[in-house]
Each structure stands twice: as structure tokens, then as C-alpha cells.
Image (cartoon, rainbow, N blue to C red; front, side, top):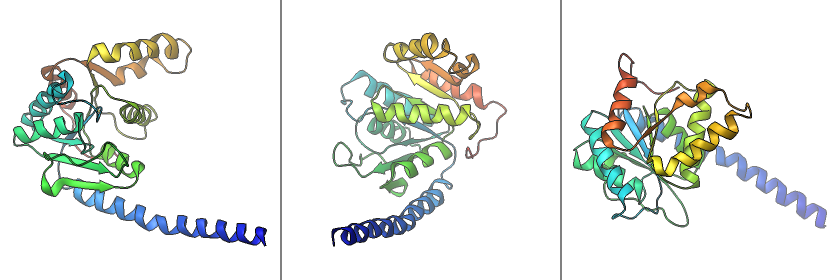
Length: 228
């Protein structure tokens, strides 16, 4: 009897997994349709826990404003902290402000600076991450936590393995990132686990002017298009 109940429970799990495919497909279709109509954008990542009076919040607002004025839309994860700052900067510049929201039990709530018709909701992190990579012409990575590192290293990996076209990845805040980059150079590189040219994928900046200069320099002579 117990064995039969076990098999029944396992079959129900497999059936639920199969039906989940349709929900996943729906998120992809909705995301592709909305994002493909927006145009060239730069994604801004960083901690949801950054307070409005923090220096990196203020810097993210300035960067997003400057990037928007340079002709790019801004994509964020749609929540508070650095995400809110990115959307706020785009809003102040009258630029495109996109929010890719994720349903989480804590931290996440839509910020008020996203364009009403450019707020997308996701249940699946992996679908949301595809949207960031596919429709971004650059990643601006502010200080953050595990989620920020996840986005950063996934983008580097996809470019390194030629799964997507190269685009600028900019770490903002040298005092925050220099320890990580030093470890990558002295430990990972010295161990032979990456090649020296892989370090060329990452840029460092401390001001909004530097961020825009890096993006503009990269796209001189490049056609802007989705990344795969």
C-alpha cells in the first residue's frame, strides 16, 4: 500500500512538471513580445537593500539618467534599492524604464518609476535572466549580493563560451569590486582556470561619465540588436 502511494505521489509530481512547461512557455512568449519592441537598453543590477540616502543609490540614479540621455533604455529587476534607483534615473531623463519583476517572499515589490506598459512579472528566475541577457546592450553592475553576482558571472560565462555576442560589462564602485577582481586575477587566472583575455570582458568605473564612455566606445561601428 505504501509503495503504491509512493508511486502515485511521484506520478503527480511528474504530471505537474509537465504542465509547468506551458507556464514557462507563456512567460517566454510574453517577455519576447514586449521586450523586442523596446529598442536598445542597458541593464542596471545591484542590491535591493541599498537605501535611498546611500551613495550607490544616488550614483545609480545619475548613471541611469546619463545612459538614458545617451539614447538607451534602462532595464532593472523592478524592485527596490539599486533597481529603483535605475528606474528613477531613466524616469528623470524621460527615457525608457523597464522592470523585470520576480515574485519573491521578501524584498521584492514593484518600484514606482517603471513605465506602466514596460513592467513584466516573472515566476521563474531563469526566464527573467534570459530577458536581461537577450535584450541588454550592456550590464552596469552596482554593489550587490548573491543575485547580482549570479547575473554578473552568468553574462561573463555566456560571452566567454560564445553563446551570446560580446557586450560591455561594467563594475561600478572600485572600492567594492577590487577585492573580487584581485582574487580572480591572482587566484583563478594564476591557476589557469581562465585565460588572460577573459579579463578584457570586465570594465571598472566610478562615475556616470566613465560608464557612458565605455558603452559608447564599444558600440562605435556596432549594430545594436538582441544578443542571440
